[in-house]
Length: 457
Image (cartoon, rainbow, N blue to C red; front, side, top):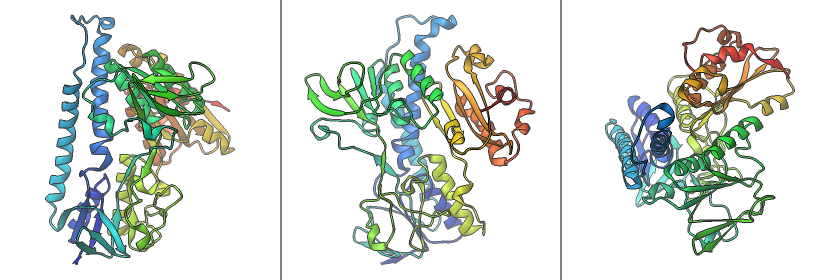
């Protein structure tokens, strides 16, 4: 039996940074990892997918080079083996950097193995038993495999498995029309595959406003991605050309035949084999660990950070979980989850940057609103870059004059949205941003103009 001042289970985006703070405070820390250091972001999430997005963007730009007066002779080809090698190299460097970081922390011990609770304050890793008054869970999530009829009878890809492909699919059918699915759909379409997106709901990315959702659909359709929404009865089956996917949509053929099928229909937490019941740690109906406003679980001395707590599904929210816990434990602060303004991006090209509430959510609150919207075709920077797809939109509380939310779908949208995020975090009237003097020519320069064009709704 080994005693530690703190035990961290999992090495996603929260745990290594927290380990650094704890060891700097002279604590003896055990960091337990059963798979690859770095969690989802480094190994199967942000790092590899955005590296793929970059390769796909280069291919897309090359195909459209003539529109910019650039001549490329001989056409554009994709070497997926080299693409994968580049992805693996970027991931390897990132993972190696995290391993080196943990290994260099005085007082930290990296233990390889599957951690399971043996009781409150007790964790078993193989034959070892570790004890500590502080245990932090950062175990992340994995791809959800829904019980579609026929799902056990066909080979399918997940967000992790699709990264191992070294040969281009002839026809990739993506089941799931949300963030992960749409990114892969555009990537493989730009690589040259035929791609069909199948979504059960009436529109793509249903959590977004309808105008944003429709603009995203138009972007994908414009690049040759087929979209089948309203797929009320998704089912899978074998076909001589690969896999057939039954859709039962109101329009179009009742099934789609593809060489490969990617299931991108959500995530499930890696909490089912931790022995949480032996420690008394509560979970919700979906398996996410229940936490309070400070990330504490139902058991004193145990915290859950990152995707496994169901309070955020992003690298930046996981890192903010670390910041909250570290500030409260080590700095005497009183930081809360409720202080966090939700923000995220969809990394199709052009990307969507989102902050705060959608217009639909704001309207449901019953407050008087001001709403402004502008197509990217009226943004000089977009015109100059030759990509005017998308729109920008902002929602403001008419009485408090606070920005409630914003969306920028278009070139640079994932970066430009941060000006809005900063104003929201500062909790100042939108007038502060309205009277800012941004740089020309940028996408951000149109945000003050957008705020000046708002109308009551």
